[in-house]
Amino acid sequence: MGELLRYGLSVLTLKLTFLRITQSRTYSYSDGIVFLTHYAKNGVQKVTGALPGMTAVIPHGMNNRFVNPPRNQRAIEEYSTHTLYRILYVSIIDQYKHQWHVVEAVAMLRAQTGWPLALDLVGPSYPPALKRLDRCLRKFDPNHEWVHYHGAVAYDKLHSIYANADLGVFASSCENMPNILLETMAAGLPVASSDKGPMPEILGDAGVYFNPEKPDSILAALKQLILSPEFRTELAQLSYEKAKGYSWDRCSRDTFRFMVDVFNRYNGTK
Image (cartoon, rainbow, N blue to C red; front, side, top):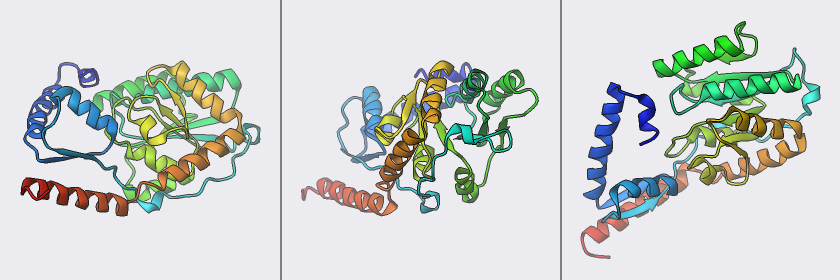
């Protein structure tokens, strides 16, 4: 509910409230429900109470186009104004994605260290959130020197965006299953991630976490990663290996098996 109220008094708030009510009712009448994460399952049941139907946690798979083994991690001293260290955040510009806090954090880190950092933001936008981001950009990068908002990029071209980045950041505070985080992991990038659920369930011990609403916390996570190429190498390899477990083959097998179990229970044969 806290995340829903970020939209204030708006048509979207009414729509989301209506969906909350109708979907809760749907869950209560379902014979089987597939959740993408344990975090999602627990979150729904806090609203609905115990569900009468069968449940399963079956994460999505990942498109193999994003798979790119971790690259050699270079010291920040090897970068310059001609070869910037590129931080990438792929996600819709929206109220719960906190791109403005990431911009502020990178601005403070640049000022504090003098490091040649660039921030690439990729994704479509929710208009009120884009206005907030524009205000932030005018404050911290008025000459458009180091923050680059690329807008929406076609899905079949996204893997090339990841391939040109040095570090991935994911600052969302509200997710079901963060496919973008999974893509960042599969792309072989060291990852700084929001500490809100379900991100720790997906990334585990293979990233550095921060509070997405506190620029100081984001700064500290980025600085910890950028300072040590050895640490980046270790975490990039760990997250890359974790991402391999999210296959569509496994997802389809588990989903059809669950459907059979639900059907058998419904018919009283199991």
